Structure formats: C-alpha cells, structure tokens
Amino acid sequence: MAARPSIRGLAPYFKRLGPRTQVALCQLPLSLIVGVLGVISPFSSPSLLASPLYLAGIALNVILFLACFLTPWERLRPSAYLIIPVLDLLAIGLLRNSALAQLPGLAVLAVFPVIWLAASGILVRTSLVLSAVGPFLIMLPSAAGKFPNITGTDITPLVLVPLVMFAVSLAIRFASVNMRVQQRELQAMGEELRELLAASREREKLLMTILDATDVGIVAVDADGNELLTNDRQRRLQQAATPAGAAAGDENHHLIFAQDKVTPLPPNKYPLRRAIEGETFADYLVWIGESPQQRAVSTAARPLMNDGGRLTGAVVVFSDVTGMVEAMAANEELVSNVSHEFRSPLNSILGNIDLVLEDAEGLSDLTVRRLEVVQRNSERLLALVSDLTLEAFSALKVHPKRTDISGLVETSIGSAQAQAERSSVALVADVPSPLWAYADPLRIGQALDNLVSNAIKYSPDGGTVTISAAGTEDWVRLVVQDTGMGMAPDVAAKVFRRFFRADSAREAAIPGAGLGLSITKTILERHGGAIACASALGGGSTFTMTLPVESGG
Ligand code: ADP
Image 1 (cartoon, helix red, strand yellow):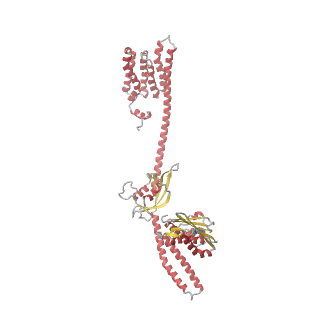
Image 2: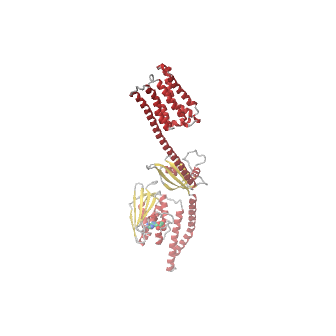
C-alpha cells in the first residue's frame, strides 16, 4: 500500500517551490472563493455588478493574486509578503460592506488572512493585533451606518467577529508554538541520534580494527547463518577453505577435513553449522585447505541469545594451531623413535638376566638378589618404555566386540591381588554377571588394570578398593573407587594429561610416570566412551569409565 503523504511529508515539497509560488499558494484558497463569487454574482445578484466597491473588492483580490506571482519576494524582507493578507482584509472589507444585503456573512472570509498572519510566525504581536483590528474595521461600517439608532443586534457582530478571529489567531499561534517546540525537541533528538550514530560508527571501526589485528579468525552469524561480522584473518581462512572454482555460496563443499587431514568433514560437522545449531564447543580441531597450505584450526563456539533467551546466532573463533600440532607430532615421533631404540637393549638385558638366574647355582645369594634388583628395574624400565610407545602411537588401535565386562573385572582383581595384599588393601567387586559391552577385551582389561593398580598404589595406608558396574540400555558404567589419599578437585581435573603427577604422589615417593591415565583415556575415547575422575584430598578417588553397549552407541 502506498504511503499517504502526511502534512509533514508535504513540507519538503512546499520548501522546494519558489517563494512566489509559496505565497500564491497561501493566497489561493481565498482567491478561489472570491473567483467563485465573481463568477456567480452576475447570475445570483446582478445588482452587485453595479456596485463599484464590490467590483473593486474583486479586482483587488485578482491584483493581489497576481502580485503574489509577480513580486520578487526573494529580494525583499522575509516579512514583506504579509502585506498580502493585510490587503486581503481590505478586499474582504470592500466585498462584505458592498454586498451586505445580497451576500450576508462574507465577513467570515477574514478567517483566511487571519490564519495566514497567525501561521506565518513573523511579527507575532502585529499579526495578533491585525487579526482583531482587521475584522473589526470590516464590521465597523455597517454598525456605524446605523448610528445613532444602533442596537445590541448591530453591536454583537462588531464585537463577536473580531473576537472570534482573534481567538482563531491565538489558537493557531499556540498550536504553532507547540509544533515548534515539538520540532525543536525532534531536532534535538535527531542531533543526539546523529551523535550516537557517529559514536557507534567510531566504536565499530575501533572494534573492527582490533578484530582485524588479532591473530584468530572470528565470525558472528545470525540464526540463519548469515554473516554479521567477519575479521580479516577469518576471511583468509574462508578463502583457504573454498575450493578453486566453487560456485559462490556453495557451502556444502568446503575444504574442511577431520583430524586425519584427509577425510572431508560432512557439512553438518562444520564448526559454523554446529554453532548455528546452538552447540557450544571448544578445542574442536579441523584441518582447513589442501596440502601444502593445509592449516590445523582449533575452533570454539558460543551461541548468541537475545534477552528472552532465544537463540539469535553464534560467534565462532578459529585459531591456527598448525605450529603446535606439528610440534606435538614431531615430539611424539621423537618419543616413539627413542622408546623403540630403548626396547632392543632392554630386552637383551632382561633376556640375559633371565638366563643367568635360571642357572643360578654357582652364584652367591647376594649376587642373585642384586641380579633380581636389576631384573625388576629393567622390567619397570621396559614397562615405562612400552607406555611411551603406546602413548606416542597416536593411532592406537582398538578392536571392540561384544564382551562380558564382569569377566574382565574378575581377571583384573586376580592379577592385582598380590599387590593389594602387600599394601593391606581389600579388593571388593560388585559387578553383575554377565555384563555385556562393546569393548576390546585386551584394551579395556589394560584400562581396568591401570585404574585398579593406581587405586592400590595411592592407598599407602591400606583401605578398600571397590569395583562396581551398572548398565543401562546404551551404556555400561564401570566405577573404580578407593579410600586412599585422593586429590584436590582441581588436581583431579588434570590427571588425564600426559606426564601429569600430583604433588602429593611425588611427595609420598610413590613411583609413576604420569602416563597410565592418559593411555586409559585414549583407550576409552577410541571406544567412543569416556572416563571421569572425582576426588577429594584425603577422601579417596572415584574413576568412572563409560562404554557403549552396542557398536556406534
Ligand atoms: P602414575 O600413576 O604412573 O603417576 P597415572 O597417569 O596413572 O600415572 O596417574 C597420574 C597421577 O594421577 C598420579 O601421579 C597421581 O598423582 C594421580 N592419581 C591417579 N590415580 C589416583 C588415585 N586412585 N588416587 C589418588 N591419586 C591418583
């Protein structure tokens, strides 16, 4: 629907007209009425044509209308055009007093010049006086003609008409003052808004400069995925992610790959898509672009909510971690190579000690004891080295199958029994049998051994280690709980890090390398499961492993 032009909407058009047309337009309503009078009076009241005053009134009006067009108002003072409404009053006076009998009520025409004078806003006081005096003078001759037999009926219009016109003038004056106040307020508001806009533009520029100067890619999108803000770094990453010759806007075939660098990520796993779906994530590693320019990018997303808590978009941050990932890979390769090199001499030492101890008859007891110490420490060293190799072996393989977890728990308890007895720790199992899960028995057995042996190791004053398990339709939960030394919760949050050891464990001189739990975590993750630790210093620890019941669960 087309918008109707409002009065305020007309103002710009009016301003664009020249001053002559503007003045003529103000005069037009009165001139039209007088024009109609001029046309109909020969028919309705032919006698008027004989009245020179009446004809002079009409002629004056015509002259005034023409003067509106012909006078160079632009060269005169701004108030000059007010002469027109003043002379209008004269013309109305001539018309009214000459056609009193034939056309009574012509005095009302004075409302046009009165409105014009009042609305002009110029010479306010003079205009107010004129709006009363003018009509008074228009009404005066008829009343004066009755003198001295003047009655109340004659005086009433003489007072009432100027009074009404004066009231009209006042009303218009007040209305226009009110309008002007509102206009001024609007102007002030407009000014304020302009200043706010300029300030917010400044801030936006500052924000963009800061964002462009940062080394991370940042993109903000609305709920439909339309970009609200993108910094330079992000634009460069997006370029790298767009295959050469891809159709513009084809977002489904980006060069975004999974952690193995080669498997293309399905579009619903793209960081931006996940963020638009309302997911919050951090450290989500993807590879962007193609070799040799391929970059490892760690992404994080936060949803944007409006005041009502409705999802309105998301902010996603992309940090280039290629250097770090490459350094970690090089580190792992080094560890892997070193441990591989350690293995052969260690195996040779152990093999030879075994041979010597098998045939220990000629050896003294002391020598045998010393060789046994060498054997124990070599075994420990070999265990450490294999842990290192396993950890460094980033593609640690698991072969899950339907496995009875209760059997694994039983085996684990059996092999930990001797260690538990040495440490005066009681082992308790509370596991339903059978308890099926989708697990690699070798690896989950290793994880379980790790947790049970830790639970005993970190209970130096004895206690109880309880292994319990429970299953739901989708998950099996395996819990290893001890009553040992425990850890502060903030320490417990770090135990799955490589080489992490709690200060309390070091101070108590409990041997360890800080690798077991990180391997255990890797094993669980490779199963699609998880591990968590809850602990309190001096209050024991609880490790909970979660495994899927079915493949892909
Ligand atoms: P390690 O036991 O060889 O040091 P782990 O990776 O198995 O390495 O454990 C890492 C650290 O976590 C340990 O050094 C110890 O401080 C802490 N920890 C592990 N299990 C327990 C437990 N059951 N109670 C208390 N602390 C533990």
